[in-house]
Image 1 (cartoon, one colour):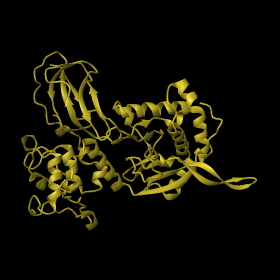
Image 2 (spheres, one colour):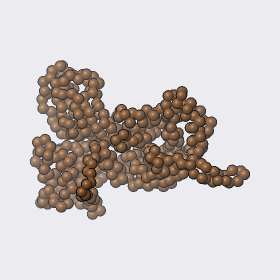
Image 3 (cartoon, one colour):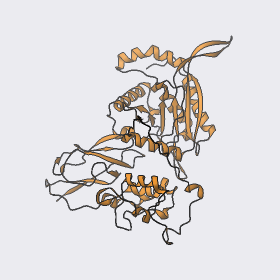
Image 4 (tube, one colour):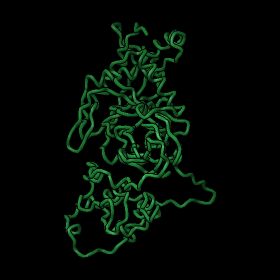
Length: 440
């Protein structure tokens, strides 16, 4: 019987896993090429995955709400029309490559000597996600084996291990064992052993308890990780955008009539950011261990608010190669798709720098958190009419100008104050030097 393995595809540069939210086909159902097979959710987007082949679904290896790693086999199709179940396949994580337990970021936070294996000493299976959490939290194989699992066949789930961590300091799962090669490993410095725990909040009478949705939980984890990984510094610059405001006011109706789309300020800002990145390419980098990866492409992410209140970051690919019309169309298309939950996985992949518009909510400035694995992010403040000193050959005078603050947060491991400050100043220079005779 000819079989085809359906694997979880790569859905973003920093996406390593996805949660199975719904199977659209049942075992025995026929599946056509490119027909939606399963719904998955990542920390960036919810998406339907199409089938890579035509056939009959004969095996599902990950049930609803289970977490699969990129590259894991999630289902098996039979191409000869037979609906007979395939022989039992190994557990998905058992075929995972060793690199899953040697992630560079995790390995820098915990000794490799305590990394649990795919199966513990008790023969119980541990998913890649559980193994990663255990490695990060310095949980050895013996301690992991003592955690009570609520999953299928007593497996330890993410919920189980996180619940255990909340009480770990007060009641260890196992008593210290006799010296073993693992126990004899050098201890981490005392400063690394400090465990920072979230406060337990007791609701008062009448308080409403709202459970975070899945995306909010993932955003929270991503933000905490970013602050933990990157020492954040923020530089601020005020830019005079009077010329841009007047130009857009003059051009927006003509653009709307010709293109059928709105002309916003965003593409103008994106153009200035792309130009500044070309001037300062070391802003367009990522960090991997002690290596700096200098990106060739300039792919600018634009944080977009969803109707649910959550945020997502679609990406304008090769923004430096687009003119204002191209940028305006790209911005409008991505923003509309984000609002209507129609973003594709490739729409949120490959970002090298991010821009977020806090001015949309009336804020004049902000301290944005870096979107890992990038090293910088720019927040655009609200455009305001303010009195300002205007210098002319005939002398200085006070006038009304349109101004805004640019807030630039950057990773101080690789971006020093000089580079971070010069970059955001250059963005402001491009905005202030905008040509009022620009045609679009």
